[in-house]
Each structure stands twice: as C-alpha cells, then as structure tokens.
Amino acid sequence: MLSIIGFFTILAIVLFLLSGKMSPIISLITIPIIGALLAGFTIADIGLFFNEGVNQVMSIVIMFIFAILYFGIMQDAGLFDPIINKIIKISKGNIVAVAVGTVIIAAIAHLDGSGASTFLITIPALLPLYKRLKMNPYLLLLLVGASASIMNMVPWAGPIGRVGSVLGMDPTELWRPLIPLQIIALVLLVGMAYFLGLREKRRIQKQTFESDQQLEVAAAIDYSDEEVPHVKDSSLARPKLLWVNLLLTLGLIAMLVWGILPAGFIFMIALSIALPLNYPKVDDQMERIKAHAPNALLMAAIILAAGSFLGILGGSGMLDALATGLVTLLPAFIIPHLHLIIGFFGAPFELILNTDAYYFALLPVVEQIVTSYGVESTSAAYAMVIGNIIGTFISPFSPALWLALGLAGLEMGKHIRYSFFWIWGFSVVLLVIAIVIGIV
Image (cartoon, rainbow, N blue to C red; front, top):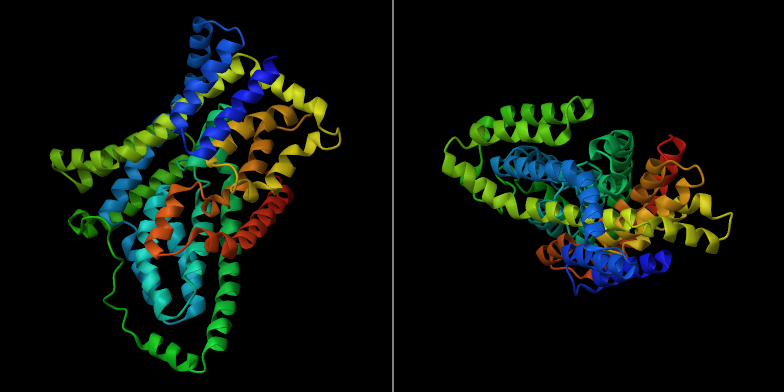
C-alpha cells in the first residue's frame, strides 16, 4: 500500500509540474501531505517528517540566498562586463572566433548561476554580431545554453542544490569532484564551437557568392567603442573597483573549493564585504538586496518545499516501499545500472520532465534502488546530473529559455530541432568521460 501511495504521490507531483497548473512550491508541499494522510499517518507524524526534511536542506537554503545576492551585486557592479566586451572586440568579423567567444562569454556570464541574467547579458550583446555576419541565431542559443549548462554545476546553481537536498549533503562537497569535468566540458565545448563555426562559415559561403566581401565588410567594422548592452542601470557599475571585486570573487571561489568553512557562511561574509564596498550608502545597499531578493527567495522557497516533500516521503517509508516495489518489476540485469540508463537519456528527459520533477521525483527513487545494489549515492546522483544538466536549456519547461527566445525573436520548436542532438551527444560524451575518470 505504501509503494502504491508513494507512486501516485510522485506521479501527481510530476503531472502537476508538467502541466503548469500548480506551482512547484504548492505541489511539493500539499500532495505529500495528502499522500501521508491516506497512508494513515497523523498530523503529528507528518510534522516530525517535515522537521527532518527541512533540517536536511536548511544549510542549502542559506547558501542559495546569499550566493544569489552576492553574484547579483557583482553583476550590478559590472565585474564581468570588461571581459565580455574584450572578447567581443577580439572576435570581430571572424565567424569561428565569434562561435568560440560565445562559449567563453556565456560561461563568465553564468557565474551567478542564473539562466535569466545569463541570457539578458549574452543575447543582446551577441545577437547583433551574429546578424551582421549572417550567422544562424539558433547557433547562438545552442552555444550559450550549452556553456551555461556546464557552469550550472556550480553549487549555487539549481541542480546541485537540488541534489544536495535529496541526498542531505552540502552542495559544495558534491561540486568539488565535478570541477575537473567542468574544465574538460568547457574545453570540449570550445572544440565543438570551433567545428560548428567552421560549418557555419561554409554554410554562409555556400549561400551567397558575395560572402567574402561581406566578411571583409564585417571585419572592417569598428568595435572599439561597442559595449555590452546593459539591462541594468549603468549608474550601478563600479569600474574603479573592478580588481577589488575580482580578487574578492576569486577568494570566495578558493574558499569554496578549500571547504574550511560552510558555503553559506562564506557567501554571507563575501556579501557583507561586497555591499558596503560597492554601495557605501545604506539605502543603496537595501535597494540592491531588494532587487535580487525575488530570485533568492524563490529558489529558497522551492528548496524548503522540496525538503518537506522528501522528509514526508522518506520518513513515511514511501520511498523505500516504492524502490522495493520497482526492483521486483524491473529486469534484474538493469537494476544495478539504472542510474547510468537514466543518465544516458538525461537530455531527452528534459523534454518531458522539468528540473524539479527530475531531481525531486525521479532521482530519489533511482538512488534508493541502485544503492541497494552497492552503488554509492553520489555516483548515482552524478550519473543523473551529468546526463541531464547539459540539456537544461533545450527544455520547454525552462523559463529562462523562453526569455532567451523572446530576446532573440526565435521559436522553441526550431531551437529544439537545431540543438537537441548536439546537446544529447555532448551530454553522453561527458557521462562517458565521468565514468572513465571515476566520478561515476
């Protein structure tokens, strides 16, 4: 009975998340409560389950709030703008260089872990350049999305935080083994961008007999005075503090890698330095916090709701019962490798499951199954993360992607058709590399 109720509880959450008829916060809170009541647990029991679940994710919530605030301040202060401007100038008129530069710019822009801000920075800055060179704007979306997805492995971005809440682990601890894979992935993506840039150059040359003349004209354009279009108030920029902000951010990342302090505490300290440093007036400091608070609180609320969901399903025994039930249904030879199979199809799953459904509904069940066969929890999680995370921005369930499509004037269907197999292939290659180097 517990496994049946657990199955329908998770199924209901997934269906509501897919349909968009109920917000993730409401579905993650209310549906498990109904399931637990149907299973015969009292309100007092459910309260205990809730406390256990929320206690598991509280440190993650703290980290998310202060990480999003910190990197929001850095974006406002213009920390990344000079680097992005320089790359745009260097790549002027060269199609292959533009493609490679797109990857680097997107990686830098996504240091704050926010897909929306990444697209707000990269699309307005690079789309005019793509249009001048007659490059396919869907290539822009493919490269920005893939680069941002690789950077999405940082602990203050959504996926690793969700995994941390599911496994009850510090996201920073989960991130450290992924750092070598991130570096490898960015190098491979630069290689893929180079290849796609060459392909794009051939396509343009094939389309018109005047392509050489067009490229010469594009190369002659003076980019020296061009800057990244700002979607924020330019008065917030602090160019004189660029090096101080850079050193502060590098120090923060070093402390996260070192792991001597909790991640949330590190971001608290960094924010308490960055705010008065860049905005000495108290009123300005409060305005900056208010500006970035919605993103921080939304992510924190989702993680807390997930803590409630996982606490109730775990404490009630539904997850254990469901995992045991699935083991009896699946062929024996598949079960120990289920995490690898799910990871292999991680990118296609992005088309039918949103991020919350994948990590909060599917991951706990798979992890529960394969760990009973001796697979480590982290190994199971890494396989599912690596296979899925690269497909983040081909998903119609990604609000940030809809923003990007709107900024670029493109269509979701055409974007998926253009990008899907490149993204899926890239994710499979990364999963294989992760197995080879021992992460999975």
